[in-house]
Amino acid sequence: MKTTIQEKDGCMVAILEGSLNTAEAPETEKAMAPLFDVEGKDIILDCTNLEYISSAGLRIFLAVLQSAEEKGEHVYISGINDNVRSIFAITGFSNIFEFK
Image 1 (cartoon, helix red, strand yellow):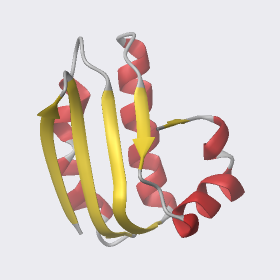
Image 2 (cartoon, one colour):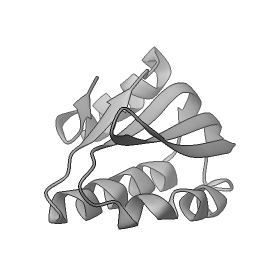
Image 3 (cartoon, one colour):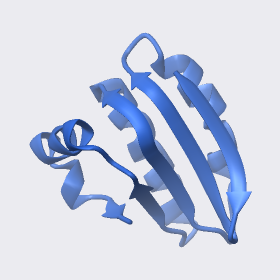
Image 4 (tube, helix red, strand yellow):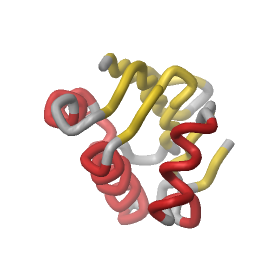
């Protein structure tokens, strides 16, 4: 699992690559820590190369969303594939997040 954080077009973008499973979640959460400090910018979780997400990964996404919402920011998910989209649909997360 690889996570890259960068600023692009006035947003903070987290590029996620690989499988965000339970074993990878602690390291991914550390890599995404800068997103919890973002103020004045929307956050995009780029899932173009995310192959799988477990409940532990969904928990990280939810924590990022809650942190952003407390500051009046938005979190968008982009590039989601059908496999990950079905996990979002089954868990109800597709009703919580905004997609680009």
